[in-house]
Length: 120
Image (tube, rainbow, N blue to C red; front, side, top):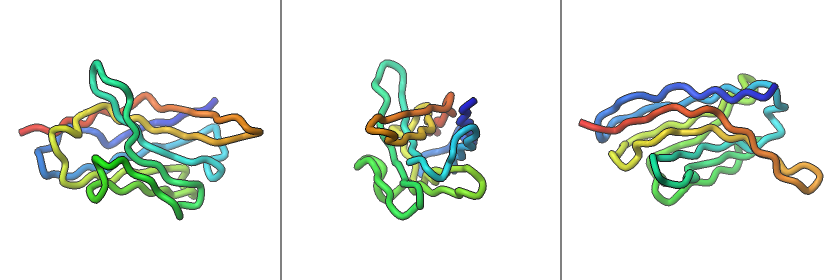
């Protein structure tokens, strides 16, 4: 059974920081690209960041570049999202994603999400 469990969300003031964690089980973690997406009510799920299997390559959405940092610890089967200089626009449910291309097909797994609220 594949499980991705997010944690670390909460309420933070604008300009503050949070670190999200995603603990994975049921997959060969080191073979997967890991990522974070976010979604607000009535809107499409938005890409935030991803990181390849080795941690040597990262990609960020323009909206979070310079503020968010994605990292992974393969020994712990965990991916992190360090969020700094948070803005109200960052308020969303943040979802952990694991994906891999296997035999020419992409496979995706998702966590249940963790709420991040940026407000005074």
